[in-house]
Length: 402
Image (cartoon, rainbow, N blue to C red):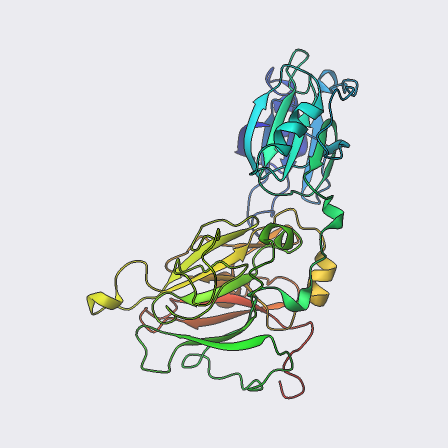
């Protein structure tokens, strides 16, 4: 509900509060403390033309104009049945693909629309009066299952089964999870066991376009589960996990995928084409990343689109941080980026943004339980190439010799 945002020269939330009080369009505000976006970032003021639900944050101070606090309307009585269990006073924000006003204040109308739409996985019905005394009810259809958030103005539902009934994440068997990435020229071989203790963990080599045969990047990766549902899995994982890393040229024929999807855009051998898509940019909480591979020279190895691709989890509603730091395996790769090709990329952990380039070069903080790594790129200048975080705690699948 933001309509205006700006930095403040004074770290005083009352400045933001006064601006809101003096602006007839302002119903509420959030003041963001200095340091939220980095060590030297300014405080910020966000003015809002509605009254959002409060969410706990150590970096924020908010306020609502006294006359702006809305009164929830009465819960309507359902007039029809969709087969979807209604979640009263619950919002499921994000993952929207369709929204529209309703002429009838009945959440079952929205539930039925979701039940009859094959693209719909969940919905949120917004009660009348939320955007003003005469505002209409609204229906928001979603192609994933967002986490529930309390809200007096919303009624939500999940198609099929409740979110709590989905299979819990198996931290030690995440489909396509990349472990112990290294560049054997710039970093040397980490000398892990040739045969790890897990049977579904495999060694892969993607190389480096400007390297000689055998030189370049290698890593271990968990087996894929093509039959698993990417949305159901990844809604339980934190952001930044690297899945199905592949070099589009050097591993063209390799069977490298996560949930049946190959990030390179090519169909992995042995996987059915069927209804599955390959190389798509977004698979419900995971998104495709393109880091490339620098190598000036012959046209066939410098054409755009050749290099490293992967999928990366993007679940900014994740809250289960203690389990992630305890159970994610040692060697898990987080926030992989190419310094030249992805200069602005960061990763969010415990609501804090991190950049592995700054962590490695400047000694900036790393996410808890991770350290910064740099493997470079044989085709780039000094300091250019791939950077990432690697987990140094958790289950070790290379015991006892690692």
